Length: 283
Ligand code: FPP
Image (cartoon, rainbow, N blue to C red; front, side, top):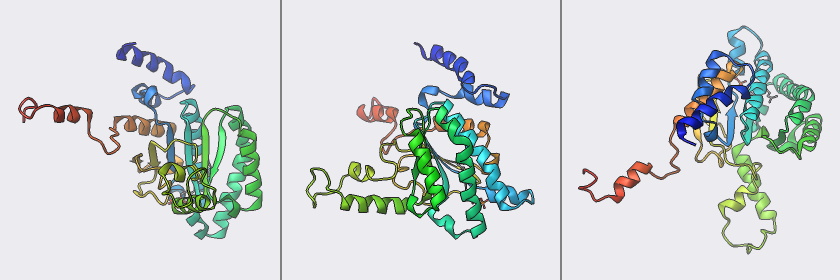
């Protein structure tokens, strides 16, 4: 199929994926090549507190509103058939927040799971948790275990919630599990390979994220998926997480497709130029 024919098909097909859409969303969808979406999108959902402060509301109101954006991101990514979506919901550093806020976040998560798990399951989404689960409150742990068990055999998108997550903690945990493992066929003092270490990360079996989005204007990776984002495109936006709408998400995907990923190599054209004699290449 010619490229223009393929694009025409995609442009017709794409809006149907998301049911009713706004004119702005349609514009972004039409610019999107559905064959080149990220396999794995990771999001640092930041700015809930500032969103609330600007409205003279308590910080926790920002978190409640942020749940709606999380819901939108999950639904949109599942409809676009991404393989995986990872949301940074609670970091190992977040325990430093006031106890009332931590308790609120844990309650919000349990409410979210109670309300949304049936629809997550119905949509063939598989729930995974990345982080030190054993340090979470027992009620949260039980709900998460139920959710993972319910959706374990689903074959659609993986929704990974990073909870009590830290990138360095993850690498340490992987390393320690590796040390304690029989290392299947490798001698105990043979060098550890990247594949072996990656297989012991919380994300084992998932592709590395191709795109990392961080909202709220902060330009840091904040100890998130440190190993896995080695080659990810990073997209920063000033939009605060509760304002991160479907249009903003589609815009980020369009922007991702404009980037050229080289994995440390060089552009194809440059490679051709290099293989030509200098005079023929016009140098
Ligand atoms: C960062 O904003 C956000 C968090 C620490 C919590 C994220 C949680 C949610 C969006 C809701 C729960 C999600 C699910 C999937 C149920 P911040 O408080 O650091 O904002 P600030 O930097 O403006 O203070």
